[in-house]
Amino acid sequence: MAFLSAPWPNLTSVGTLSTTREGGVSKPPFNSLNLGLHVDDDPEHVLKNRALVEQSLPNPPLWLNQVHSADVLCVDADFNFQTLYSADALYTQVKNQPLAIMSADCLPILFASHDGHEVAAVHGGWRGLEKGIIKNTLACFSAPSKQIYAWLGPAIGAEQFEVGAEVATRFIAKSPLFKQAFKLQSNNKYLCDIYLIARIELEQLGVINISGGDYCTVSQPSLFFSYRREGKTGRMASLIWRK
Image 1 (spheres, one colour):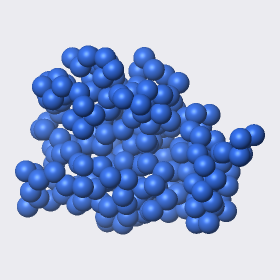
Image 2: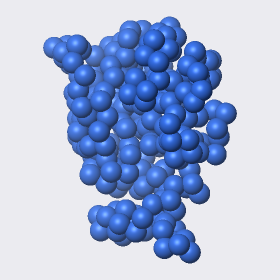
Image 3: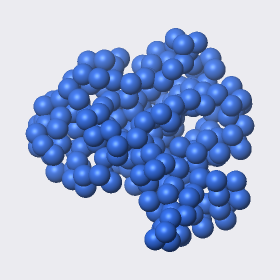
């Protein structure tokens, strides 16, 4: 079972884990470590896959119904874990409570404060990024932005993410800085660098400790699920917890 993790050697009090498609029990086209219950895979296979991942976690993770929003849930000791909430980011100071974000091309972002007391996980689709999900998540932290670490997990690469002009227009309307994240093609569509969009947003909000952004879910089919590549496919998960 192949897992990735955020390269934060000084943050020993924070755990991170990002799954690949390897090491599960699901059958094609969900082979093999599909963690999404909403993609028409056999639910028993998905639950077995989740149980396999939980062997590497201190407790079962908190999952969301992700809806491409900019909504953030703050998880505290009184949180109702029996409810499946619709949102696209999670924040907590609770120890040993893994926060999970699923993806299959969208950008997962993991956050941790410098002292490891605050952590968050973000589902960064282009819609949520444009609506301000990074800003909303950082607003939950008491630590200043310059003391927050951010890791950009596996997402669609800059040479694979083709979007319409309306997407470029919406981002550039927010800030001309986003223009550098879009490359016009001969078909009047744009190649969009979602990693660069996140980096620009993070830097504008004062985050200086940014890592990751090294993968492409579309062009690495043996390692990652990709909705853009396959349509009907599984989901990876990126998780973070305070130890």
